[in-house]
Length: 205
Image 1: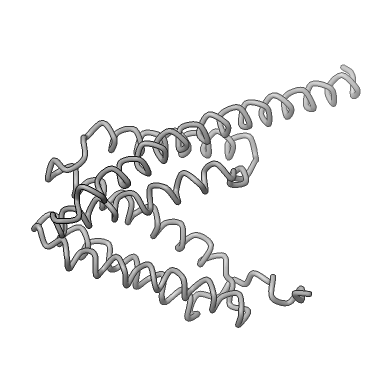
Image 2: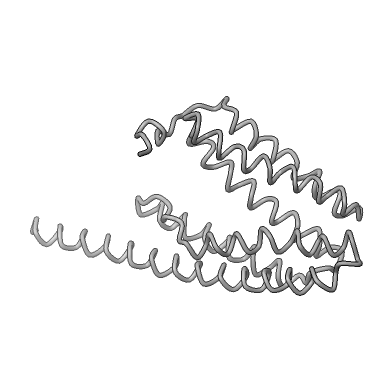
C-alpha cells in the first residue's frame, strides 16, 4: 500500500521535477523555432527530450516525495505550450489548417473565462474530467505523428492518416470536455445562488 507521505504536496520551488519542468518550458521556443525553420528532425528530437523529461519528473516527484504545487502548475502548462507551439508552427507552414488552431485555442479561452467566473463566485477550478485527459493525450500524440511525416516523407502515407485521426478525435473530445465543464460551472453557480437565497430566507428581514 502506498504511504500517505508519498501523497504530500509541498510549497517547494527548487526540486528536481520542477527543474525538469522549467527545462521543458525553456525548450518550447527552441522547438517552435525549429518547426518554423523546417528543421523537423531536430524539432522531433527536442520533442523526444521533452517527453522523456515529462516522464521523469512525474516518476521522481512520486518516488522521492517531491510533489509540489508549483509542479502541478508547470507540468500541464508545458504540455499546453508544446501543443500550441506545434499547432502554430505546423499551421504557419500550412501542414494543418488554421481552423484547427482556432478550435483548440478557442476551447482553452472558454475554460479560462469559466475559471474567472468560478473565481468571482469564490470557487476554485473544476477537477479535470477524464475526457479532457483523453483529448490532451490525442492531441499530444497527433501533432508529433504529423511532424514525422514532414520530417520523413517516405512514411507520410502511414503517419498522416494516423495523425489526422488523433487530431480530429482530440479536437472533438476537447470541445466535448469543454461542454461538460460549462454545464458543471452552471450547476455550481446555480447551487451557490440557491444556497445563498435559502440562507437569506432563513435569516428573514
